[in-house]
Amino acid sequence: MSGKPLLYFICTGNSARSQMAEGFARRLLGDRYTVVSGGLEPQDVNPHAVAVMAEVGIDISGQQSKPLDLERLWQAQVVVTLCGDAEERCPVTPPHVRRVHWPLRDPARATGSGEEVRGVFRAVRDEIRERIEALAAELGETPRA
Image (cartoon, rainbow, N blue to C red; front, side, top):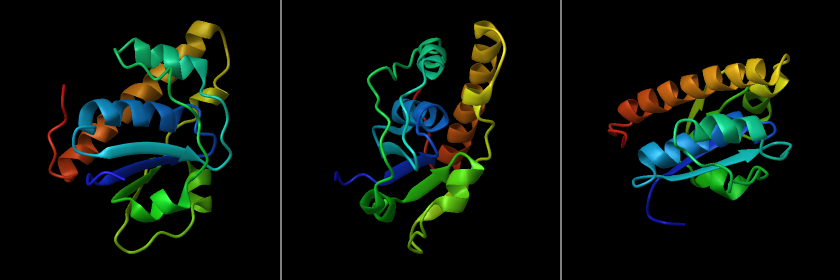
């Protein structure tokens, strides 16, 4: 692992919310943090997540869903859980790991037309960006543009 602090995003499927968070954090903090994501029950990266991130100039099409890595979990400076299931089921972390929980709506459960579903993904995407910017400020970091 590099000498940079580790920022770890965890969700159940590691298919949408945590993938979008990983993409934003890499763009905004990737020069100062090692950014990874993982899932309790990994699934394929959701194509709607890929599409709405591309709309804001972030390509997550090469990202892959990964299982939770306990070694990285213990090495992290900050662990962010993005759903209630991950918060409840995430293993205990050592005292030096700051845990943050963002109870975000699961966009993968959205129903309706393709455009309606993408609208839900966009809303969650935008909330994730705001939360990452706020987390960066709490960590004393200024996000890159």
